[in-house]
Amino acid sequence: MSMNWPINWDGPLCDSHVHLFPEKLLRAIYGFFRQQYGWELPFPADPDRLAVLLQEQGVGRAFALAYIHKPDLSRSLNRWLYDFSARNPWLVPFGAVHPLDRDLKLVLKEALVKFKFAGLKLHFLVMPYRPDDERLFPVYEALLEQKRALVLHAGSFPLPAEDRLGSRYVLRLLSRYPGLQLVVSHLGLYDLEAYREMLEAFPGLYLDTAFIFQNEAFPLPMEQIRRLILDFPGRILHGSDFPFIAGSPLQGVARLLQWRLPEQIYRQLFYANALSFLKPDS
Image (cartoon, rainbow, N blue to C red; front, side, top):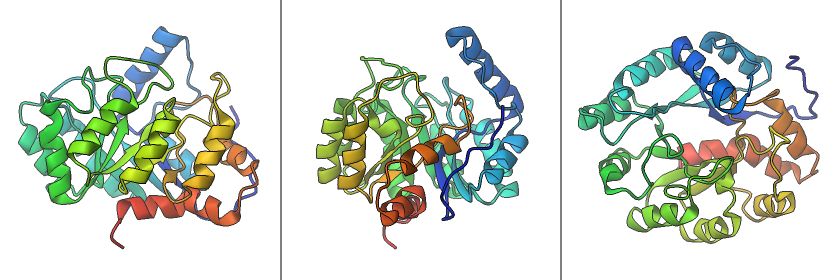
């Protein structure tokens, strides 16, 4: 597959939703997608090569998001992510955590204090918990104490799980911890109207565009999405979901540019909002 995707953009580019794992784990994830959905991912299961591919596409910063699906894997994955990010300082690492990690306090201390990760990633499609589960309260409290950020997969796009995915659970979480600095992935689809209200109410809430503009298989409310970006230009982050996409990560950039929004909005969307999210007080 050719990675070439022509875009008319020469400004800075941050991909706020990238997954980089050890090769063995990447191969397992690729195998899951193949067996579960018949989906052949076109990218190598080699994190070093994936990082090079991103840079070749003009990505100057990227949020490297780690996550796990069962307990007691967090520490080893976070150590790997720390070492990998040290070799690739343009990456912004977000560590993994599971509420049933036996050494939860140590996991949090290592990730947020020792490794100084930008934050943590929680993926509620692969973990059988809701965002407002009280077993996760120590995670949120550690993030607030250390002034770090959180990335959540908490919506029903691209796959639903009614028992734990949806804006109502995120609203309960933010109502309890309104000071959280939080990105909800995939624009929180399909609850755009609910997230409009939450963006008004919680200044630390952001949304990312991961996977939305990288696929053509899902019918999406594109006009609603365009209005959301226009109405909240400082709160939306560009993300691709690379390498768990079927084509070049620049497809999303190209499709967004087709809307011909004001250049300042693109500068916010593609780069500045990511910096504001990471440093909300600057």
